[in-house]
Image (tube, rainbow, N blue to C red):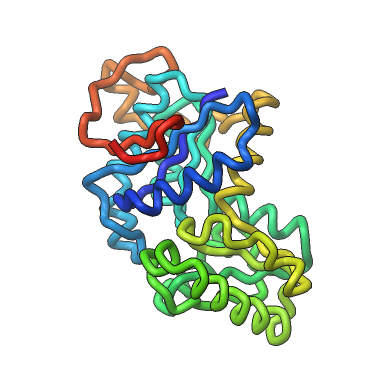
Length: 263
């Protein structure tokens, strides 16, 4: 199977980090591409950043569809453009936020989201309400680090995760902790055993869920909520399918599986 992982920001370093982590856990027969758009913001840390990156995310979803991919993963813990992406394609599209939040409710009574900064706390709480799982949300706690810092300084990030996870467990009753940024991919390893609670890396979990769903032949229904937009129906192209050709996207950064670097 072919899976495209989209890092919605333009950070080549973070995209390479994601690729390194996901390559270690993918199935042997999974062809994995990790991509990011040049034109997007260097980090997604606000609603404004999300809005700026969505057109580029949608173009990459269209590119994946045209090139015969089986699924796309949006590797940002705000799932920018997720619903629109599901409307414009007939392949599976999952976001790491929605997927990992639902997984967290299956693995403990209460979960905490570790987000990057205080300004994002109400956004994450709102998303839990939107997914109708707010009763399972113990808290949202800020790491007080930027996206770039979490990617560039793993030791400091892990220390902060330990501190905040301890607070979530002792003060909020959390049994599960979600690392609420793709820049923290791979950082859950070892911390669960050390802290005595479950720490989830959303990007890694979503990759494995995606592989399972593709193998089972599952993807979003197209008859209602994710139906093709009327504006697309009026256009000659309509919904993109895996065999439909689209225009070239020469400005996108693609990390080739065998090279592990941005081109």
